[in-house]
Length: 64
Image 1 (cartoon, rainbow, N blue to C red):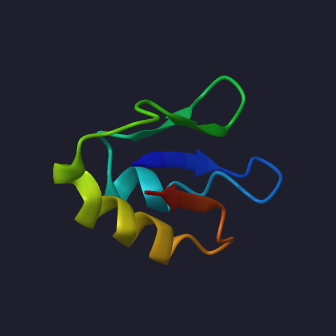
Image 2 (cartoon, rainbow, N blue to C red):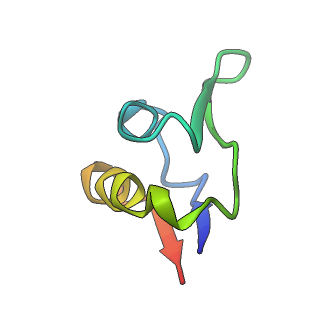
């Protein structure tokens, strides 16, 4: 599984960070969301699906 953030859509609201802090982090220096694990373990699938679903800008894609 692979996690991709569309940086043009993302407004760094932090919803994904709240849903799955193991994979997402908010960078305080430039107010952008960072992907900490581009290929996270399958055990995080439920949290990642929730993060993608909750993203108000639909900026998260989960492949695989």
